[in-house]
Image (tube, rainbow, N blue to C red; front, top):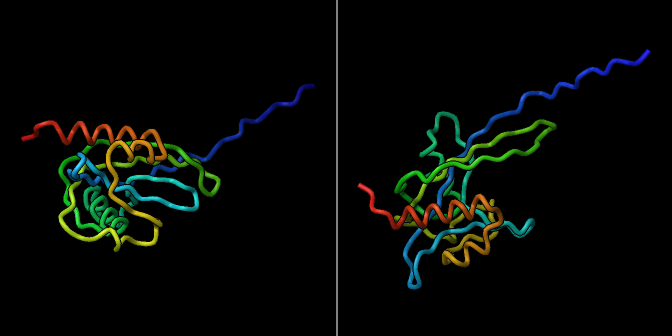
Length: 152
């Protein structure tokens, strides 16, 4: 008699949210953005992080960018969200990250926290080469397009 196979139920995916920013300025050779890099895994990304209790997405983005870059920033406008899946503690996690176009209003990159080893202003073309993930390159493109479009 054939044995019945029981379906293996996976626990439901955990959903998480985060927020961050593409900090942009006009340099001598055109647009520049702030990238944050880690030596251990050689990744370059835009700063982002998870909300503290009671914090809005915008407040999270402002705080995380300030902590991870050392810059004081203001939100110019939303530029969209990215999402991705990963595994943690044996569970699948679906993370949605909301990003904002930002501009620096003060601060100093040398005051970034220890989450990243290197934080720097980078020209747009170099940023495109350095960014570790296609989703970040898409955010860069969106930011560059958005920064040149007139907005009310």
